[in-house]
Amino acid sequence: MAGEAVKVPFIEAAAPSTPAASRVVIYAKTDGLMYSKDDAGAETLMSAGASSTLTVENEGTPLATAATTLDFVGAGVTATGGGAEKTITIPTPMAVISDTTLGSDTTFDLTSIPGTYTHLRLVCLLRSARAGNNSDTTIFRFNNDSGSNYDSEYVFGSASTAFAAESVGATSLLMGAIVPAATSTADNAAIVTVDIPFYAGTTFDKYASIASAVTIEEATGGVRTWQSAGHWRSTAAITRITILTATASNFITGSRVILYGIT
Image (cartoon, rainbow, N blue to C red; front, side):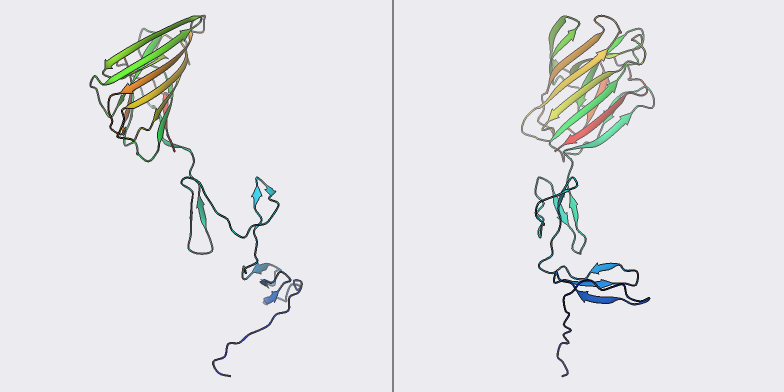
């Protein structure tokens, strides 16, 4: 009768054999779903149906039961896609913002730091070009501020000797991190790690926690470690970090600074 929908019943059964060349067969299997098979024997699911399931694996090991729904949760996790293909975006807890290796003797100036992370971490590999000396001291400035707005406290250890000192109302943040210089044992560089929590906030002043390790000379007393606390008297969000030496010397070629953003 004109206008009536055409209904074709299918009997559920095992998958049929591969059809002849240039042919495709359509059939219902015992799982209640519709499939097609081409002349190469490739089977394709035509409709998921209400009873379809998905095997979920944990690092290659299937979970005990199959799934019909996946719910992605967690800070920053998003699921997108209007068609059959979906994209799941899982943010990394720590991402590289910048990675700078010096191609010539100079200093570091990290600009346009985005405010989209919660904390910052600097990982530095540093050696100074200071002539006629075996060491130099590394300092920081935030947002190009060279006013007397920085306070520092540091503890130093070498062999069995410990020493502590402070710097109040200085024009830069004294990392307390000694780095090798020109007459230091060749190929040595200092490792310096700086954590700056809540750098993008505008309610409180900014603080930094600094740890470093260095070998100035390969002899007793030549291996040194520092732990420093730094305070910048500003509530401004940090968008720029400048790394210098206290003697205005440059860092040598190959020195490297990686800036990470932490969520």
